[in-house]
Image 1 (cartoon, rainbow over the protein chains, first blue to last red):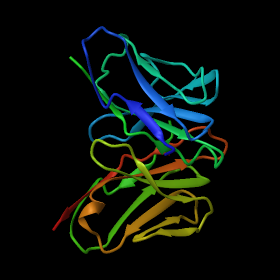
Image 2 (image 1 turned 90 degrees about the vertical axis):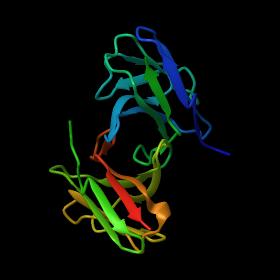
Image 3 (image 1 turned 90 degrees about the horizontal axis):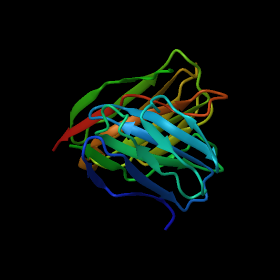
Image 4 (image 1 turned 30 degrees about the horizontal axis):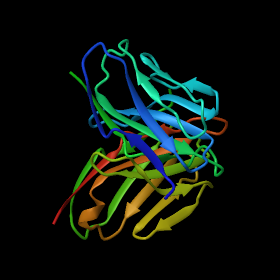
Length: 113
Length: 111
């Protein structure tokens, strides 16, 4: 089945450690996105990539880094510079129907202890 | 950045009631999307709207692209327990490369 996978579903890390969240899609979509969601809040854009080997900062990129070496993959690293990393992280992708119809993965809940 | 005002923030209704929610902005959008998010899951796209005045249905859900292009509405008829969740609107401003999301409407249904 085509879709977006994020792993793991739950992730625990100690403060000061970098952690990488996985996002893979087999929809052949060109664009991929990372969002952060805090309890009771909407979605805030961290980074996005419209093509392989290119990406742009979103609204809250500080303390995060990404890479886009393959079309299918868009990993997000939460660095120790991110002051409040505990959150629900959502990956999305969009394809030939335009950048507007974004399809989301199941999310990764990161807890930093 | 751009903001969408989504209301109401939360709704508590009886099963079988109809539901209405909306999103407004001071900016003009050329696409409106409505998503539903279940607890602990990613949002699922319900309806996409591309033209001012467009009215689109998906089962018991109906969404409209406002004539002014600054607002959109979502209606759910005859609510059932599985409608519980958070509904998000999202919009795309012409020429922009990223969606703007509303803050969400949390729907709770009393059986």
